[in-house]
Image (cartoon, rainbow, N blue to C red; front, side):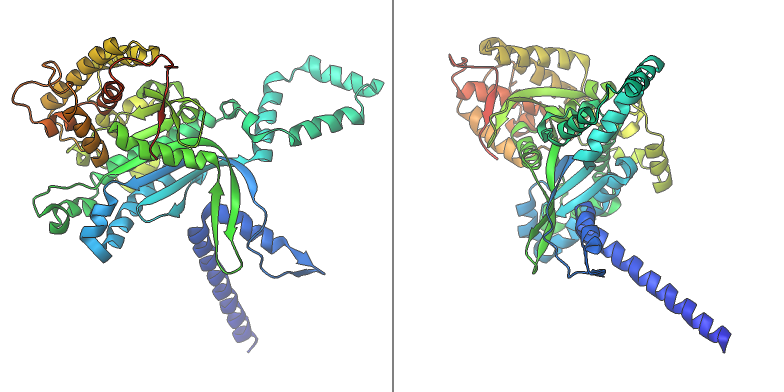
Length: 476
């Protein structure tokens, strides 16, 4: 009988543990990393030795993170065509996106904070303000500590020169520091952290073009009239900085979320991909946190201010083109996990996916484009237009020779086509050769070149007198 009671007790304990584990897993999936603080703070709240009632609207906490918005291109079209089956498509995309973000995020720091239907907010949490300051101070202590300095501090303590007032002032200085004044690039390990975050997005780009489940959607009659006339595309935007992590809502319904101008900036970056005809846009803050190997692969395409901000900043893209042979580079989950574990900055020059999607970029194009961009920023617009036309032609010829089938965000194609129709750009014999289809010409050219040419042409082809080397992005 005693044995039966023990077995029953063990069984009940195991069931309780399994139940708690399932609840924990559901909470993590529903609320993500932002909800962890809400849950833990409520569990810690006690009155009279007893846990108080659940209060989800606890104060927020300032944290540092990378924020990435990922959106399904032409989502409204897909929604209209698929109706209720749009949920299946979203979940098929999420399966690839979440897998790669979790895989490449440093120590599981990559999390999907929100699924917003046609968009996803990905958060790569660096740490709270206190944690970030502690990491930086610890690194500085290791770098600058020396026996002489330590000996000097001991002597000062013995002589009473190091007073409690000195220590208190230092502590107050730390607590009063503005979240905007901290240079994240000084944190140890931040370059690998940021590299891995972007690699997860790039791997997602490759993954959605070789995932068997997603490829079947191309032949869905509702989307492409049954002739493979459509493809499932994602666009990506990222920024880095601080945010308030916490709960928004009431005791009836809350959302664990991040509130910050940097979250908004990531959304602006994502939206702006449509204007430039690219799949990726990264802010200057993100570019500054990357390794030198990664920086070499990004392209500075413009200097702008975004809606809601007066800060001018460079914006960067990772040049990625859709390839029909991505399936050749597919790997098992174990192999992909091993690649992530073995990360080094050399991956930017050796990984098959990363190299293949950027294979259309060569030194000749980059040299001409950079000259054209610099002339544009300097206000020498006639020279800039000439150089950017040449760069666009180089890109077009290379893509035709390599057999690329390009897919560009639909909004970019429509807006550029309208601008070119109302100008003499498209009639230029260097920019457009007789017999070329305009849609094909735009789709296979370089989006940033075309966008800058279109902007300068809209302004009359000459820089205004008050040109300061940047322009506002007026649309969201």
